[in-house]
Image 1 (cartoon, rainbow, N blue to C red):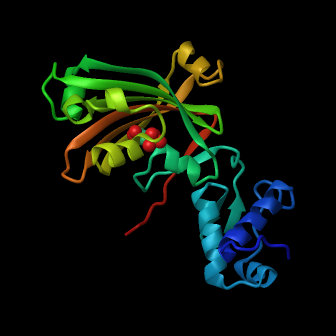
Image 2: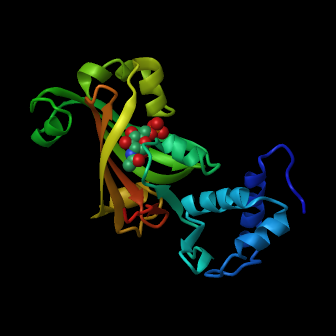
Image 3: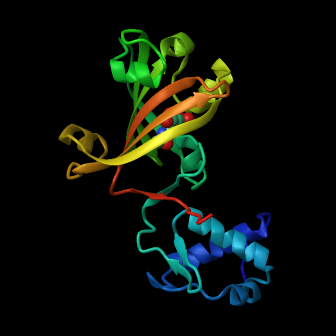
Length: 242
Ligand code: 16G
C-alpha cells in the first residue's frame, strides 16, 4: 500500500479511497467495501477508517444508509456545504483543498431599508455599508455575496479592507467575532447578468442563502444574501431523531 508519509493515517486512507473513486475502481452508486475489509486493506483500526469515511461523507463524496452500507455519491463533482458550523467561504474552500478568492464589485454607504434595519437592529435610514463580492474557488466563480453591515461598527473597513477573508478582517482588524448565525435557504430565479457573472449564462436559478450573523455579545453584525451556483453547489445536513 502506497501512503504519503507525514500525514495522519485517516487522511492517507481518505486520499486512497478518493483515488480509487476517481480512477473508477468503484462505479457511481457502488457500495464501499465493508469497514472490516477496509481495516485489513489499510492496516488500520475501525476508529481510523470511520474517521476517513466520516470526512468523505461530510464532503458529500459518499453517503451512508443505515444497515446497508456506504455508497458513492453520483453528484460528487459538486461542492458540498455542510450546514452545521458557522464558517466563512474561505474556510469552506480551504477545507476542500481549494483556494478562495473574491472580486469586490461594490462597497458603498447607503441608508438602511426597513428590512435591512430590522436585520441589523437599526432604524430605517441609518447608515449601512453595502458590500458585494463575487466569490471564487480556485479562480472559478461560485457565488455573488451581498453583505449589509452596521456602519457604526464597520466604518473603518471602507478604507482598510482590500480583499481576502472578511471574517478574518473582522476578527483581526476590528475585534469582532462572528459567534452564531441564522440562515435561510431557498431557490431563487436569477437575472441573466448574475448568471453571466457566475460564469454560466444558462443558469436560471441559484441557491440563495440569507445569513444574519451575531457577535459574541449577540449583536447582529451582518446580513448577507449569497447566491450560490446551483450547478456547482449542494447542501448537506445530518439529522437526528432524538
Ligand atoms: C460565507 C457567509 C457570509 C460571510 C462569508 C465570509 C454563507 C451563506 N455566507 O460566505 O455570510 O460573510 O462567508 O467569508 O455561508 P470570507 O471570510 O471568506 O470573506
